Length: 165
Image (tube, rainbow, N blue to C red; front, top):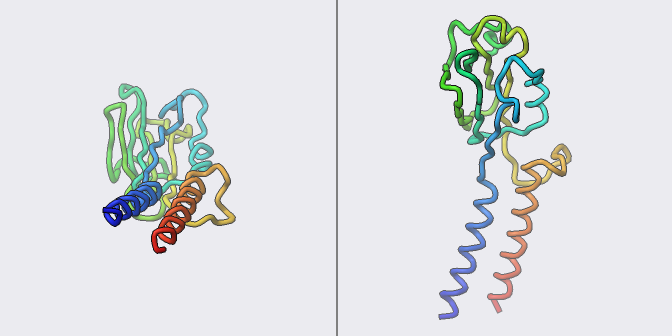
């Protein structure tokens, strides 16, 4: 019977450790201002302060009478050209889940003049790491999960050593 409880405890700790590492983050683009050409949101600055990973979700909230979201190529992003988008979103509350592919994802508003006025965003998806690196800021999500993973694995090791005797 004791073996059964030891197994349950070990499985619980492993599940906790793995869940902490695989959680995705949901970001509301532009925070409370949303996706707009009004309000002076600097979307490049907004994105620069975040670490995006595959599986994270972007939520674009906007008035769909005046805005839309178009995923475009780098060239379309630089030139504010929305004529051949990769994807188009226009319901006013669009959810975009970032794929596992690393690299840049580009989004612009396709309404005339909005992209040129700054309603565009470059999202850089980076590799998620399970260890702390010097580049990880103390408040970042990756360092939070790394600390939790380290703690969980430490407790798991302690429990396994305890059960071995």
